[in-house]
Picture 1 (cartoon, rainbow, N blue to C red):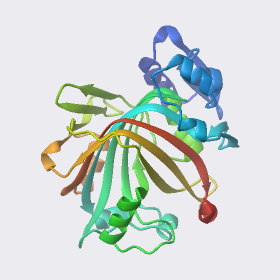
Picture 2: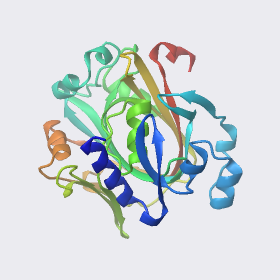
Picture 3: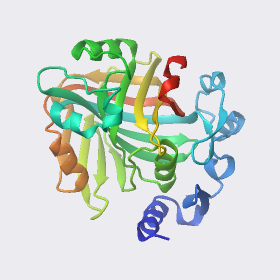
Picture 4: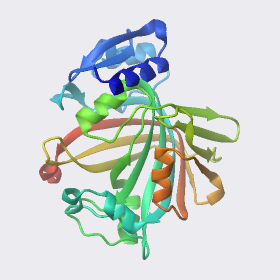
Length: 321
């Protein structure tokens, strides 16, 4: 076993109750999971009756309208993956368009480009997710993505961004995606070819704000601190939002994946003071610094949402989604 894999397992095991951990295998990778947890028992396909018994306060009406399909994504799983109770904060910034273009692989760049909202500036979204209860037990994740046009569609910069916002259907290319469990890392890397790595991610809350600390994977010390205000005046009107991403699979083929989120409690702001981003000297912070972030365009506070994540599909099949 490689040293990196041993380290990953140790870090992941620390995130679990040591008395309740067991090791399973996914695509040849040993993965520590919660013994008797949802993933250990059901491998992404728990009966909704089980979810209702374990979490009777969770509204399952939406999930009852969605069917699951067994699929092979490097290992057997079921699509979509269900996330029953979650929260997130998102900050959308402008960034250097030249840097963003250079970060998108050439084969992907033939289909999508960063949206240029004004000369020299593109758009990135930084999102911190807390998945409190899902098919993969529970874990935290931080996403850094470039906002792009839909594959093959023309890009009209700010007009395209406005159109995606109005349709509540966004497209992007994922740059970084740290997670805090080995189960989430292996599934994401093998099954979705996403840039995941294992590190400490902690959510802290007080009456005013949500603070997310992301550790440097080498030193284990906090590297990025993302703080978002708890906005008042939450809307409880149900919103369905689709986030799609273009990618390349292990065979070199263009693919796309997407998640549909059912937002149950949400608010947004354009006040730059609603967000505080503190960057250290580690690899993730240095990567963010290189993007030359500028004006914050929007902040989203979503303390209550559900989600369904679909397995990647060939990009050529996009028209039939």
